[in-house]
Amino acid sequence: MEKFRGKGVFGGIAIGRISLYKRKEQKIKRYHIEDVQAETERFHAARDEAVRQLKNLFEKAVSEVGEANAMIFDIHQMMLTDLDYCESIENIIHTQQVNAEYAVGTTGDNFSQMFASMEDAYMKERAADVRDVSERLIGILSGSEDSALSSGEPVIIMADDLVPSETVQLDKNMVLGFVTVHGSANSHTAILARTMNIPAIINTDIALKPEYNGMTAILDGFEGTLVLEPDEETLRKAQEKQKNEIEKKQLLEQLKGQENITQDGRKIEVYANIGNLSDVGSVLKNDAGGIGLFRSEFLYLENSDYPTEEQQFSVYKTVAENMAGKKVIIRTLDIGADKQADYFQLPPEENPAMGFRAIRICLERQEIFKTQLRALFRASAFSRIAVMFPMITSVSEIKEIKKIVEQVKRELKAENLPFDEKLEMGIMIETPAAALVSDQLAKEVDFFSVGTNDLTQYTLAVDRQNPQLDRFYDAHHPAVLHMLKLVADNAHKNGIWAGICGELAADLELTEAFLAMGFDELSVSPPFVLRLRKKIRETNLDACRKTILEKIEKGERL
Ligand code: PEP
Ligand code: MG
Image (cartoon, rainbow, N blue to C red; front, side, top):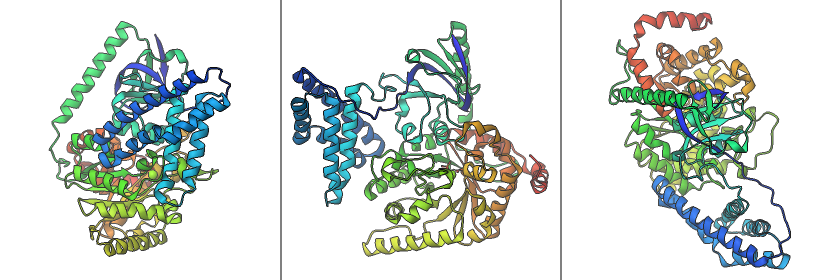
């Protein structure tokens, strides 16, 4: 038995086998082959396996995102069996007497370049698909496909680090928990763990060893510990703790259907944050009043190329329809910084958190923005959708956004495509600049939603991605609380509503303060909805409001 320490980012106990997460090896080695027939057969076997995987993915995607969006996996299967593609690979193996990985890599490069140079937009887009299927084949051939999750049973993932695009592609049903050596508590990977309702520890003092693969482990997200090969007594205690947790959750179930109301009658909306369509089930299960933040960029991170208008339209419409009339606030693309998709080809930056990201990309690359806006507005014809824009710093940005929105609306009208004329448009307040000019900003928009993750980062000049700075990342800092109060006041002064959708919204130590400041909505990861409801229902605001507001005014800690 061995015990390791890390930092818990989501409470909970996971008991299961470890699966080491191997990042895909990008470099392909070329080597000489004697038996070209055997090598060709190896290619055929890998192709059959890839087709089998894609069939499974297709079925899974149909149930999660609908047939239209799942079609891509069907197209990938067709590409794998395409005569020209296969002949090219076989030819290279035979004529050059080389390994199959190299033949697939070369063919993949040639074919994707050929597609990329075509005039037709649809064919152009296929370049990324050829690369994708070729990578899948190479992964199978070289045994470097994502080893995690291939065991067929749910596992605890152990990795050096995980970036959001990797996390989002994990099969949630097969992940019991995460253990990472690096990572920070405020990173999107930590946020995803919370959304997915799985225990996770980061910054763990462990050196990854291949022999850990398959070992039984206990991951305790409350304590921030990992025990490998536990003895019987430790395992029994962990199972007991897990059982207690389940019982506690069942108690919270009783709060379903109840109002979010304080003892002295103050009501507040409790919404949930999601990253994609498959999170909606958890939102409904936890009885959230709506979706306060749909991080639409995860749709981009899951794709190997820009998601099309149709693809986005279908996802937004399905999410909103599944929420059956409850409000769904979709944030426009917030890519950049830690959320990188290769096909955006963003240049490397010295200081990415302060760089070319979010609304800045949308205003510079307006075609991407307009495609998303068209999809959002079209989906608004079917259910209750609101839109909000990330990383705003000034009124001029909103004016620019509004102009683009008007253009999109005009186009949709001209094409006779319906949309909600009264669609609410809000902004995220996640920069100190936005908080400080919130009085002016409030005159331009329908609501504010405070992104405390970034607001804390920018106010305190503390990189939220840097685990070394976790102890300086103090979201309770009086400066942050002061801004929150300012934002709520300026919203109300101008007759609009204000919410919080950053992770701080789920911090039960501050629930009273948020109520005292007058926030109208708190949006949290789905598993926190009922815990927050419990806290609100236990609060007597009259008893604490005055003291809290005085402390904020004086810049004291709460
Ligand atoms: C935030 O910054 O608080 C926020 C909600 O956005 P994200 O965490 O996705 O940057
Ligand atoms: Mg943010």
